[in-house]
Image (tube, rainbow, N blue to C red; front, side, top):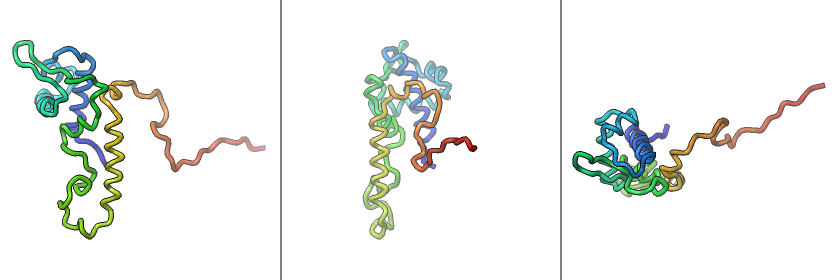
Amino acid sequence: MLRVTKLTDYATVVLTVLAQGREQVHSAAELAERSRVEPATVAKVLKLLAQAGLVESFRGASGGYRLARPPAQIPLRAIVEAIEGPMGMTTCSVHDGECGIEAHCGIRAGWQRINDVVVDALDRTTLADMLAPAPASGPRHPDPKAIPAALVASD
């Protein structure tokens, strides 16, 4: 199963709390309380997000954190890469020469295409999109292999 790490998930949760009060400066303790993420974890993600330029930090008695730019200008890819590093479905889809069978493997191009699709989706989805309410019901993406069916009354 492909999934982002818990740390990336927590970073996104903390960023959504910041996005709800975008102009305000929030303490790490307040962010931990509002996000219900452990304070040590909040401190860790805030440090990484600040290093990536996604949040601004302010020192002093009234210091804390706020978003560095509007939520609509923060793509999910930036969040994922701030926590996890460069996007790559496989090592070879990011770095040349790090795989012992690279010279004999024919699937690198396939993984790179998949990687490009995932990166594109993360680039097109912003923090603002994450704040939008979820659809009311029904599948998010219909199964392309599903065959539409209808009940037909029999005589």
